Image 1 (spheres, rainbow, N blue to C red):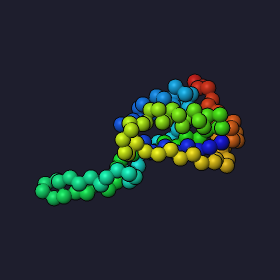
Image 2 (cartoon, helix red, strand yellow):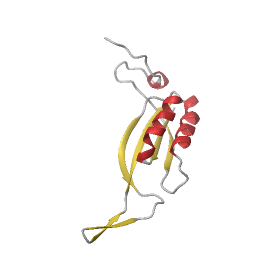
Image 3 (cartoon, helix red, strand yellow):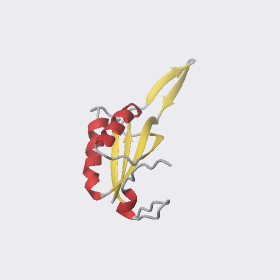
Image 4 (cartoon, rainbow, N blue to C red):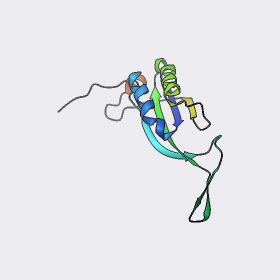
Length: 120
């Protein structure tokens, strides 16, 4: 099992999400983050005063997957997020020691497997 963390451009979120869903990767968490990588520091003027933007808005996706889905997930993100410009982001793949589905107590791969939707 692996935890894949992807830092992407906000404008690429819909494309990345569509690519992941097409690859049958549906469990993910996202958060808006700010950071600095290879982009240049942006300098703008607001009401005559210079403003320095050191950090750029990004989206962070966290996706826990079983081994067969690691490369599928990475390739889906790469294909949808890449513009070829500085600031496209990064993908981090880390070992995932343990996963527990809170509702059922299922462990590891069983906890990662999507469940069918149930309607009351």
